[in-house]
Amino acid sequence: LKPVVGLTGGIGSGKSTVAQLFAENGVPCVDTDVVAHQLTAAGGAALPAIRTAFGDSVLDANGALNRAVMRQRVFADPSERLRLEAILHPLIGAESLRQLALAQGPYVLLAVPLLFESPAFHRLVRRSLLVDCPEEMQQQRVMARSGLAAEQVAAIIAAQMPRQQRLQLADDVIHNSGELADLALQVADKHRYYLACFGLPAP
Ligand code: ATP
Image 1 (cartoon, rainbow, N blue to C red):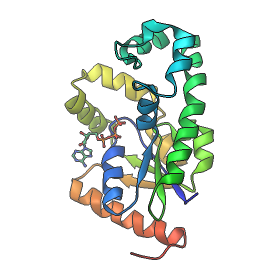
Image 2: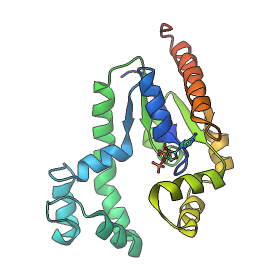
Image 3: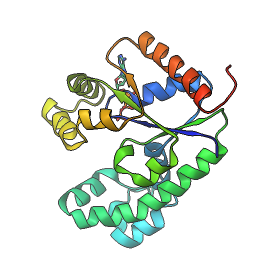
Image 4: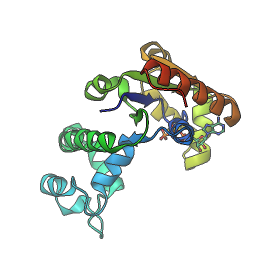
């Protein structure tokens, strides 16, 4: 396996934006959120087990996972959440590994929103890269993108690991509180650093 850099950060911190900038430098990204969607889309590998565990009521007309229904079930009952995670987590791990092995590039990013809470993923990465910005900025960006109310976004942020703790755990940090041009400069800088760090030739 190529060297893996774990990309993490709170909701709306800018992980996808940073991954896009790394892609422009020739570094691919395996995104565990995308993998989870693939596994639960119509025909996805997680669906048979989900159907057996939860019944047809959590599937939509196409046979894909109905996320809204499932969200309500796991929200109402923590044991259902554990049951769903017991099905999904091993499949997400295996599929992410498969995609990491196929990825082309000098090294690979693995985007995991809860990297520091997920030992199996954390063990896999050579460096962890945190995308950090002030919480007010996270809130504004998520509201602009999703149309969620301020209180809803604040509740999600409050349920995640505190910013200071993430900053302490991260090996490397990208500060996403400025312009996109500044973000691109930071990514180019980190890219050079990782190439050197992993003993890879400079571009
Ligand atoms: P999630 O946790 O929800 O997956 P994320 O961490 O991947 O989010 P992005 O989707 O990259 O975050 O960014 C959230 C929103 O903020 C997007 O609409 C993005 O275009 C915007 N955004 C990110 N960084 C900046 C920036 N530096 N300047 C302006 N807008 C930005």
